[in-house]
Image 1 (cartoon, rainbow, N blue to C red):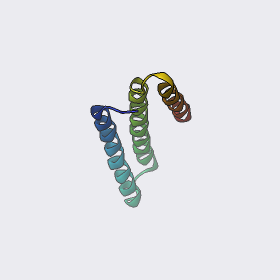
Image 2: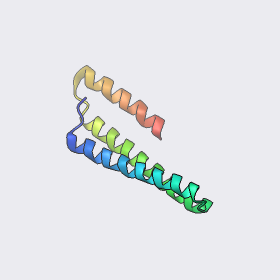
Image 3: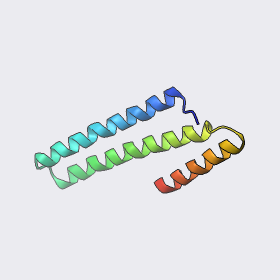
Image 4: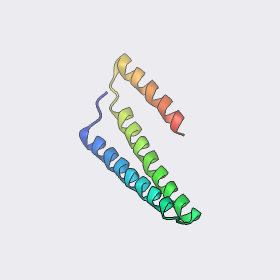
Length: 85
């Protein structure tokens, strides 16, 4: 299954954002930031990772091909979707 490059770039941007957020969270912990502030940032990082996963799934489903191979790809993607939700 081939994922279009522009879809991959969008997913990579979301993951890079999450990576930056995680670095910020670690810094917040090192600096003794409040629990509520840290949890807010953790929720934002979690959301960024989830959005990346769902964007990748959506692209994969729309580009998974046809025939038996496409059916197998869709089945794998559906299983991955269920694991995320």
